[in-house]
Each structure stands twice: as structure tokens, then as C-alpha cells.
Length: 206
Image (cartoon, rainbow, N blue to C red; front, side, top):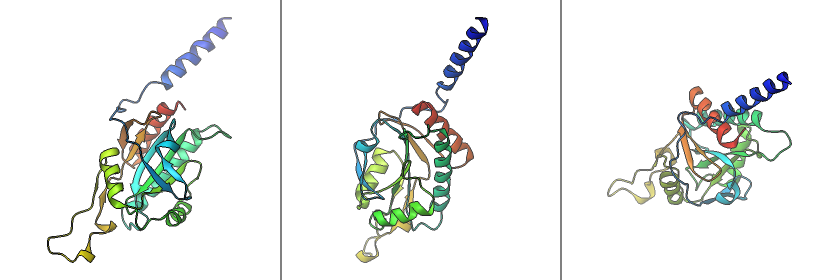
């Protein structure tokens, strides 16, 4: 009897410990309703992610510098999340990479990029709006993340408008809870990945 009581106390203590929120988790507000097109041509957005914990970041497929390391870090995040998920169940956690070059990154282009980085279609999705202004508004105002494409200089040739290469964008992971609230942003380095995974575990109860 004493042994059973001790085991019960230990289990309760472990659950309580696991459910403690990470120190740097916060509530930064609700993401507004949004909808884009995923790499498979299907809609992705508020309706599809409702009730799930998810992580979003921002990149574009032709980026030669900062996006490949971000994509590799996202692949590592995917593997760490996949290791936590119950086998055979619909994943309660999703990752969404939103293209900041939506005119170029069509669903077929995103599908090729997803395959290149080993994206599991059950977990990691790619999204495009098809329109830069729509994307900029959502990323800047909705996800509270940096996305800036400078205006062309006065008198410049209209055909020489800034491109994706001229775009400055956030390289952080943004974690969203099941109610659609932003709960924190973290870097793609090892410490940032650890913090992102800790937030996901807490919010998804994994």
C-alpha cells in the first residue's frame, strides 16, 4: 500500500513538473484570421490550425543566405517535435513556413522546397498568399514580426522595384497556442530550439 501511494505521489509530481510553464512564455495577443495556399494547393490558415499548437516562421525559396540555415533549423525542430508525438495519431502540433516572396513561391515551388528539406506533410507546411502586400500586413501586424521591403527611390524605373532579395524578414520561430495567441518568439540557434520545444510541449501538453 505504501509503495502504491509513493508511486502515485511520484506520478503526480512528475505531471505537475511537466505542466509548469517555461519562464519566458508570454501572451502577446491573438493572431487575426488568415488564409493562404499550402504547398499541396489546399487552404491553410486559421480554420485548418484551429485547436492546434503551431510554430510559424518566414522565408523564401530563392534566398541564398539566411533562409537555408533557417530551413535546416526548422527541419531539426520538426524532428524534435515528431519524437514527442503519439504514434498513429493526428499531430497536435504543426509548423508553418510562410513565404515572403509569394509571387514567386507558388505551391509547386514550395512543394519542391519542402521535399528538399524533408518536410513531413503531417507536421510541416509551407504557405503563400500570392501577394506581397497581403503577406507583409499579416507578418508585421498579425505575427508581430519584421518584414520590410523598401520602396523604390524617387524617380526610379518602376520596373526596377525591390525584390525578395531586398526584403528584410524575421528569422525567429513564433509559437502560437491552441486559442490562436502568440506565446513567444525564439531564435533558430540551439538555445532557441530548446525554448521553442519547451513552449510547444507545455502548450500542447506533450
